[in-house]
Image (cartoon, rainbow, N blue to C red):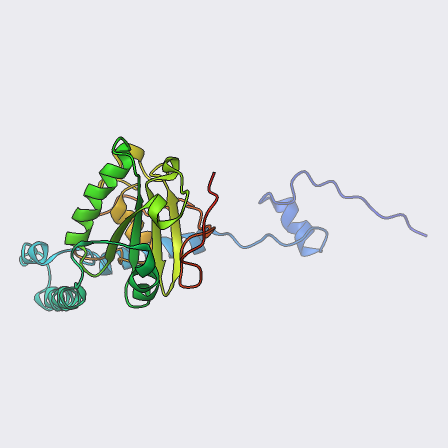
Length: 252
């Protein structure tokens, strides 16, 4: 019986004449297709989409400034789109203030209300020395005035959940569709005492976008620099809801 012939192959992936002969005779497998054309096609498509959507985040004033640079029909399409968006926001802006909560009304004012709109609850500190909690109270007021279609609420943490530790305040709870969707214990997941409404990937406007309360192209938003997810935990331990508004908590 003939012994198998071993053919020396330095690099089966190399583009050489010898390798072409070996491939022709089935000694080594065919070269995989080059990814370059696919990459170039994806880049071209990305550039096309970026160009087609170049006006996506422009406000009405910005669109007016582009009259000499853009096609009139194209601009008019986006003007109508912005006007429709503003009209929709105006009709749904029914809150426009921070609502103080009482524990007996939590289910009605938060859980049930979240079936119609996003509801964000700030569990405040009982200590006036808690800088983050005081900061969030001020930011809550600004957000409530700016985004009237989102309901912003406040209640002292230990009045909402018996024994709730001050070290866990401020706590942000995001409700939608009758359920809690996001939970932040203190502002460490954002920018701590430097947390603001806008300015970087750790701001509160970005949080509203991440949880779905606002669309990324909402005309009320300034351009957000980053849309990275922060991986904030969504644990629900002992958070009041329609089923257990009176439960205690052990958050130590």
